Image (cartoon, rainbow, N blue to C red):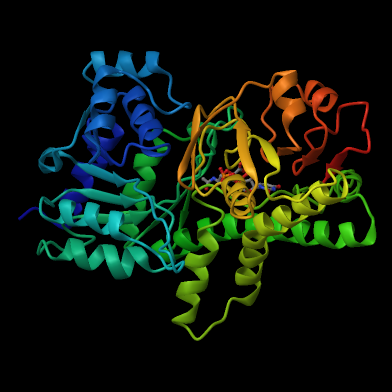
Length: 442
Ligand code: SAJ
């Protein structure tokens, strides 16, 4: 049996000469860019996904992730540097496996680790000496130690001696061209110091800065702090929005003015709520785990609650606006939504607060249509709507044009010119000079 040192040294050498065969499990907005980064640096990479459609797309060199250029994918697959498969037996010959599957919450907002556990079970059946396993999926502190390690230990192999296990949070920001994978420092925490060292050596091949920490729990908590920080600050500005409306103060001017402070303040924008797969979810992972320590993370939970309430608050404001300015009830009112994705300039409607606002208005009898340059069609209740063109007729026919996502590339001056009533939840119309009374801001 190779000594522990030899096993680790062999893997480290393979990593340093970029011969380590790398597997990435989960080919989404985190996994696919990671495949490309490792393959671009010369590693042989296998992308694993249970979705045959994704596997086929990657094999064809068709990118379905906006941050991954098809030309890069084609070059790397043609060079045999990157391949995709749904056959987990590929793990038998891989030196590294990085898990990048989703970690949603359940209907009652509890952690849902089924995808992580599924990936770990597939790995455990094929775990062999010298393998490094890295979990990247955002999760509560303790997951790697308490969930991943016991599953991998069923192989009979010993962590830190035969195989190595670490956690390293993903920090991909979809659509951000300023910070790409290489520019974003990588936090790494292993079960043992050797695990930390090997995972650090791995990521040092593709990112400019690696930040090792003492444990997987520190690394897991780091990611939650980053995202709960956003949740809390967004909730703060959302609560202030509701207070400012009651006090007759323009919250957008307040935020803009506060942002002139060159230190000690980071501006966040009011909005119709928080969407995506990170910010709405991560606070609940942390608050759930805190209960196991008899700790009620009130502040974290309250922020999530305020953000979760925003779609309902916005729906109430729209009903009031249609009533006061449109002189009509919301029942039967035609509401044209501008933007239905969870944030601007992306095509993702997952957990989108816009959809929650529209569902609430539809429930009260509003007739919904929408325009979104990134979304051709939208399922709303029993209906499937198609994105409408922003013609003067469609704008004029609406009892309320409701801006829910402030995509760039929409002509908001054109919108104001032809719409009868505009309700703007993102301050998208701020730059339009003429601000008639019929434009109402959150
Ligand atoms: N939102 C607001 N007001 C704000 C900022 C965001 O209402 O001031 C809303 C957005 O409209 C969206 C939700 O919150 O519905 C989340 O927005 P986000 O800007 O946090 O974007 P995400 O969900 O794509 O978050 C990702 C995260 N990246 C990772 O988890 C790796 C987050 O950590 C990043 O900080 C964030 O991108 C970013 O900075 O853009």
